Length: 630
Picture (cartoon, rainbow, N blue to C red):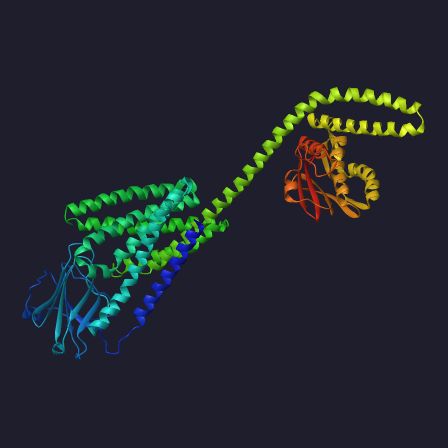
């Protein structure tokens, strides 16, 4: 899944690069033979007659000269149509086409020399048009009249270009097909994501589907917002407008839902409440769309207010609300919030800025910067979702490790329980005859000569060894700490050092102890010494000659830590994992009881022990007990 998200991000970046290349090519390809018309005349009428004659056009009153960069003329009261008079320049034999990039209107006609050469009539709520008209050299210095009917936006807002048909049509296609590429990419990514839902766990499915819906609706919006689509398939315009509105109604609540899944419901569940409001509003908008289609657009003003103006204000509130919340999380050093803020900040600034500018220009402005915001924002969503899946994967790995550890601990506990029951039932019965036997052998040793005492003393040593093993069994079976007192670790280690230093010296090793005075724990002195002596004796035996054993301690976060480190032969990972198991020992004559007893004593004293070791380097035992103060 992480590779899939990475692939989507790379694919998205490549498409973005192609999008930029198209834009640069479309703006940089200029034809030396092209001419531009920067000014024309307009007049207003209270009715629209598409069959008006040339004489009637010339007789229309109130012609006003305007230029391309002049402010949008204010519509007179009651005016429903605008007529535009364009004086064509001297045309060459190669200049055979006039292209008007952007002209607002529902019904448009073009008349030249008294003949209607173009007509477009739309019964849907999309006023942006592009007009491509054929010309000829004989049309030089002629007057072109363009009539426009619209109750909303009206008039020419783009440039008027005259040039060779092939050059103009290529430039127009190059400048608008980039929206198709971008929108198709988003839809394609959504389809891939939807196909991958079968591989997701249920806890990731919801957030994945919400992002899938965000991509799908964004792609539909980008494609259906382009005027190129309506120019290419004008008869399907009503379908495109409906798809645009539906996609927008779906995008906003799904986007808020994704935000809620990533960052939570917010204070007082404000995000959840706003998302519920958007869901209700979107459902209302769906019914408004159906009502608009049933009534054939009779209530278009009401439809425009609900689906455009009111929705725009809700979008502004949504951007400001979510941006404020995610900024707060960013200051709390939330990495997902920082990524989200970066992408969303670009999207929100461009989106809010364009909406404000859109309304300030009385809707005589086409939103296009928001596409760059969508790209930045969706990339940030991919990164966030990738981080979320990566964290889930790490959690699964961690849970697997913990499960393995718990399973090993359970097996160890079951083994210890069996050994405990056996030791408790047998140890006492075995020790009594051993003590009687030892007593008689000791009496016999006192009465025999020196030659026979050697064998009797060997028998006594073996009986003592057997007695020690039974003692370990009893300690393991009944690991009561006994009398609990406050232990000063410095004093305890002074006694331990006195016992073990001679043994280490005989082996050629050295023991260095560094324990501060203020380390106090609760426990039994003899049991504590028994556990520590067992560990240090193992370190001495691992030296196999000269070596160093370092012992130090410290207090941290309510715990007292003791480190015992040697530079002996060390252990590999397999041996290290089995330390403390019943009857396991890596010594030739070892019984495995020493470390078992050590583990149980430390456990009963509410402590923990961890071993770190590397073959040929040495071993370090880390023991911690609760501090007396804690």
